[in-house]
Length: 218
Image 1 (cartoon, one colour):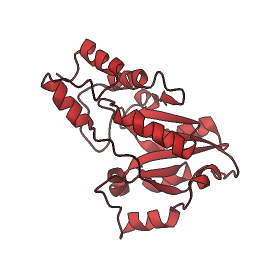
Image 2 (cartoon, one colour):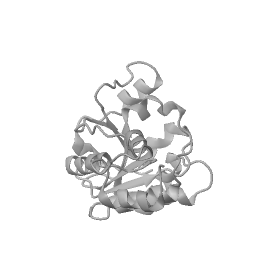
Image 3 (spheres, one colour):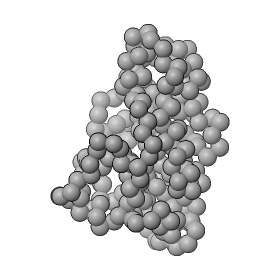
Image 4 (cartoon, helix red, strand yellow):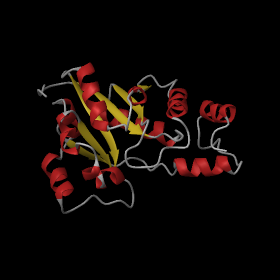
């Protein structure tokens, strides 16, 4: 991938199962958009996760809920590309597709939590990720990045020291960011819904209405 310098428009990629999407997701996305000056944040539901059990809600339902959650957010969109591919949803495939669509005139930033980074050496073609994007690592309270081993060396080799660097080239760097903690988990939401308890304080109203209409998570 050729490197383009100076003032690139920056697109964030926020992947996950979104099972279901809750307030924590768009709040974190909004904070990243403001901090990093993102032109757009693409929330990308994973259709078939390679490293975990298949979610109880179908990929189509999960994508529909993401679309409802970001309908009023002008710089957020649901990217459905992984629903259209057979087999496991590999991030590298999505990044290559996205880069081909956007071209080298855009900087692409993949958003990852610390927990994902700790296991990234198990990802499909993980060494190629930075050929197609930057990686923004979200440092969560209680988590520690590795200090030894191949992942620690990879982090040290590619770490960026300033946010402005993500607009100076199309990819290749790793930026560590600490966001406002969002004490909400999809597991908690599913448990409340399964128990017939209220979850309206955790979910956008349109998402909760959809869950009730489709009888999900019962």
